[in-house]
Image (tube, rainbow, N blue to C red; front, side, top):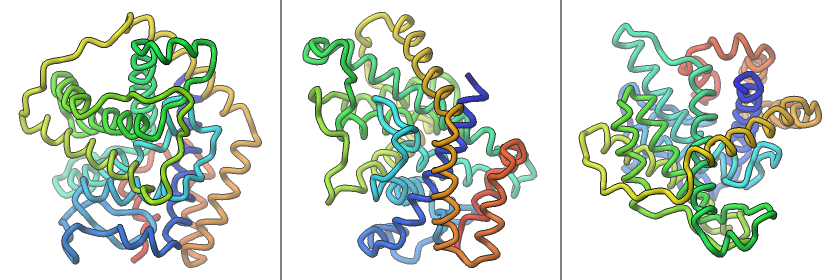
Length: 313
């Protein structure tokens, strides 16, 4: 599964960056971006691709998540019932860039793009399992058994918050207990529930919701790392082990099918190349596009170097 999953994660990153660069051409999107306090920056802060912003990881996650999801144009082949593979990118990329820049300043090894891909896949696995638990414990959903039950917009945001919180704790070196605490805190703010058949698209006036959810996940992860006690755990419905095996098997088949489909890779690469060429000067666009030609070399690259290629000075 790992090889195919990482190939799909690479496509998801390209697809997400393409969506983000195109969204930055929309003034309505740009009005929501930047720091909460105008002009505020952070030393070794996380950068926002396509911009010159350098922000704390919480606000950077909002910026990245909002630009990625703003157009609601992410490639559908990279999505499952629980949402899109890119939903948690805001949290993961912001924290990985912050951690990489901080590590280098302190003489430590930064996380690599390989770690970024692993976190992206893990976040979607967590979201998928959380959604399977929700469906399994909901009588209304049970009545739709045999059909594809897609998470509503509200459920998708809840899944993003929960999965982002868990993966951020891991990226920042937290323990399993802190991961569990972050998940419990995120769940306590609202479970992934909804109505069968609800449209997964976000309202046109609330296209920042995914950015808000992934940002909230970072915030809750930091609370867990600071020692915030988890609320009383709520027992998930059904047999978690059985659902996890079934869910991972389904995802494995999905990623293998996508990785083996040249049409998916072709259209993602074509759109990425076009959006990069539109948003950046020719020299920078060429270097950024070249990074994705050799996936092995890309995965070995420190995350901060990838982000450095994708920002505007």
